[in-house]
Length: 529
Image 1 (cartoon, helix red, strand yellow):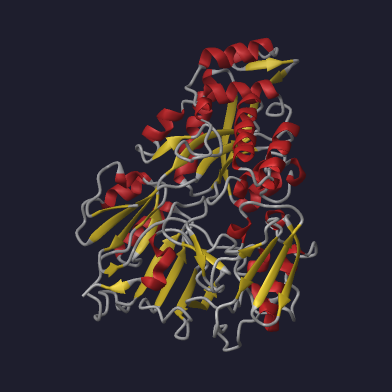
Image 2 (cartoon, rainbow, N blue to C red; image 1 turned 30 degrees about the vertical axis):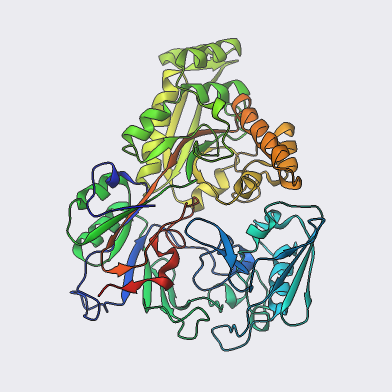
């Protein structure tokens, strides 16, 4: 993590920038009447639910909840609701956690081992609509041992299992009386975390207030609000007017706030990547030769330079080039001659307007991106431009996610993914054929037995060398038989008012705004004196 008091053009070019405008010193009200110990941040979207039973906060940092473990600024696991890291059986099949003493939910009821068991069993229940259930595939059973111990028994040794226990814990005495899919807990959560939900106006804002009885100590930031503003330009306008303390902004708009006094920029590396899904059921993108040609036609370096102003890296696969699991020999530059040769050999011949065709079908398809997302729009347009150089006609179209989701089976989507912690986290749900078409898992319905085998080996082996070989194989298979066109990995930059101490950033996943960003540890911020 780096901090800067002024922003250069490159710094302004983050894919997600959050600025908190300089307000008056702590102890005085802001110029707009807001309290100095509150923060209002503009974000692009809101979660569908606030229930961990349906996937909310599964990677930690939910603020309303805590997991058994949590990650620090360096992503190192440490105790949260558990007193210490788990005791692991010699065979790697049992993990025993002892709960911290005296923890209470925000309604005053004590946390017990039964709450932990309830949480995990409900997530694992096939009747619960949790699309991340496969992440806990290794769990055979979870049971309580008294009020303060929880024992997980695994089906097979799963090296990164401890990292899965950042999953937030919910109160059985409330959630256990409801249908996890439709109950009021989804919008009226109760947890053990440093903040409680005070108000949620769907499509408008979520307001959180400090939990004065938080086991980790009452936060100094007494309230924060996430204002939901889908359009980038509107967020920028509201930030400029002082209606917001900060906002997530694309590079071109972030640059307009350059060199303002009283702000500090925080830069976080991420595993966040932009990619194009290539549905196998589409008659054009389902052709392996077309997918290979698209991969070769992409000028990833230009996308990093022109769209991200250097705040990122070319994506040669789902793992970033600075990830220890990355296979360096898969790096490749744009090669239009190779793209044309692949298409020629596969029978896609140049036709009218330079667009190729095969058996009377034009090499053409639609690429969707979510409305209001300038960074994805720019990626989509660059993708279409590069594809056309190889004779493939890509029509770029914006739409809401409500429109995009039912079309994902047949239309390409400019998507964003990326997880931290372990390569299994994210790669399995992105690529395994068993999850094809399962919501936003494996959106392109990719099916490659060699990749499935690599994923299963990486998930089940305890041997680091075996796991490394498996993920190396996976990355090479994605080059030979791409189900996605990977474009860029994106750095996240944030701009905040320079009036709090204790701010840091973590290496971040794709999901940021609510959990990631310098407010991942907002409960630890201290007012600057």
